[in-house]
Amino acid sequence: MSDSIQLALNQLVKGYSVETTPGAATKIPDYRYILPPGTTVYVTLLPGSSIDDTISVCIRLASEGFNPVPHYAARQLSNQQKVAASLQRFREEAGGTQVLALAGSARVPVGEFDSSMQLLETGLFDKMGITRIGVAGHPEGSPDISQHQLKDALRWKNHFRERTDAQMYIVTQFCFQAQPVIQWERELIELGNDLPVHIGVPGVATVGTLIKHAVACGVGPSMNFLKKQARSATKLLKNSTPERLLHELAQHRAWNPDSIIEQLHVFPLGGLRKSAEWFEHIQSEAETRSKSVA
Image 1 (cartoon, helix red, strand yellow):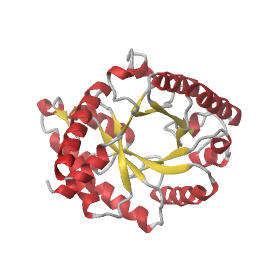
Image 2: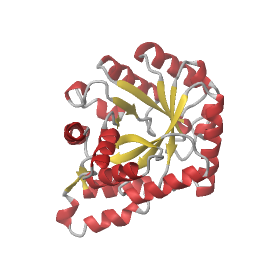
Image 3: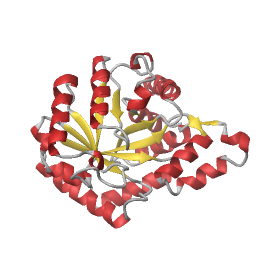
Image 4: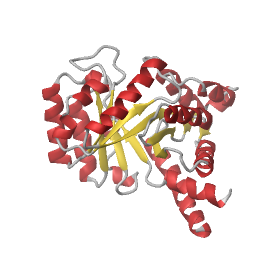
């Protein structure tokens, strides 16, 4: 690996973020035994749970020394009053200043919001002191939104950036191959996107688990890549790591200094501890190699 690629890999894995769910939190006695201090941890808002559950986990993560980022899934939020109340609790009890605003996976909205744009338009994030706002990105498209709608939404969010005091960035769905991500990044630049990108990558998980999540989330072109790894029942049970993906993204960054890919966001599909241990190893290895070439 060349020195420039090694340095790019170190930049990518340094300070990666990860996510957890309120359900998983009930099974983890203390996140400090799993994650490095200060890790940015996103907390999901999935169908069947409430924003109160999400904020409660954020408060706990803050008390354990992490930077919590709640998902504000528009279709699962009842009204502006509920959003404002939860943000106030997040600010006062967790000291949080960063959120992820997205539409959410619920087919039918539970309240007055249908999209993240409607949620952003309320101005509540600025009013409540949120200084960083992530928005969703889909390198391989979405089963719920057309490509035309995705492009329109991206343009809107770039314009909204000029009307908010918060720093904005894109967090993508998980991907298994670098090429669709690189092609998508080119399309973003052509559209005039100015938001930095955090690329979603899968953690350590069996090939069978990855396929299950890919089907559920509508991840498209990468499915062929996964299916090639699963040509037998034995291979379905084999653990897969994103090592090749990380190296190809690092190579892309090294060869393209104008890349807007900023860092990684880890989806621990096979379990948080397993993924955290692997990324900690990769991070340590990258830092050691970077020092030797600096």
